[in-house]
Image (cartoon, rainbow, N blue to C red):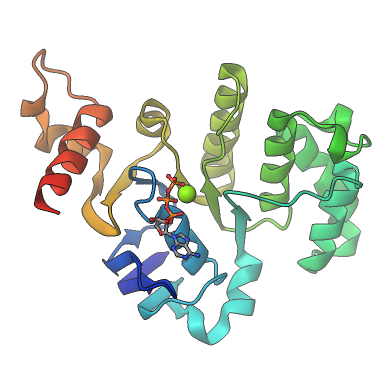
Length: 251
Ligand SMILES: Nc1ncnc2c1ncn2[C@@H]1O[C@H](COP(=O)(O)OP(=O)(O)OP(=O)(O)O)[C@@H](O)[C@H]1O
Ligand SMILES: [Mg+2]
């Protein structure tokens, strides 16, 4: 579904945020993209979405090079960015309508699609309230609704549960799993909540300082790093600390 070859981003100030990255996301994956603050996760997502240009390397989405037909590819992807400017004066319903039209979603299906998505994210009751009056969790929910309004087959979620209360985190997690299971949506997600990631993802990548350290299925990782645990049950957190620490020593 996604393949990158030697993907590199050097910002104008000379800083290399993503270095020679080779990752593979398969159809149907819930793929966790993990790393400490500043590892280059958001930079990678922005390149995959075509929001910023790579300095080097290539990106293939569904085997198509994104530098050739990003506008076609955009129709099949949905994005919940790290920081989003919400349209505070719009109601949730207007916001979704606006984006559905932008994506040229079929007019005949528009009304029922908006209703369906609002129900999925638990925002049907607040559909006609202005976004400016939403709580953070509600904004996050409507942002998730926006990312799936046009029925994309691949979604990018940059810390979708950031700042949410435990119930909100669980709800978003359940929506992601449902989208994946029932609609076959492939999910590329970043989060610092490693317990959450280990519960919903089948595969993960761990990056540090712009470098890929490990890409594997959760199952293989647990086997490979079994010896890290003293009591026999290794967690993703144990593996994350181990791998990002050893990278620090190298760097
Ligand atoms: N526009 C920019 N110009 C220069 N450097 C940048 C720019 N944007 C990001 N960086 C740097 O690139 C590195 C990676 O940033 P990025 O936002 O991709 O990290 P991240 O992994 O998403 O971190 P976080 O977990 O905090 O969201 C950081 O060191 C950051 O300071
Ligand atoms: Mg980020």
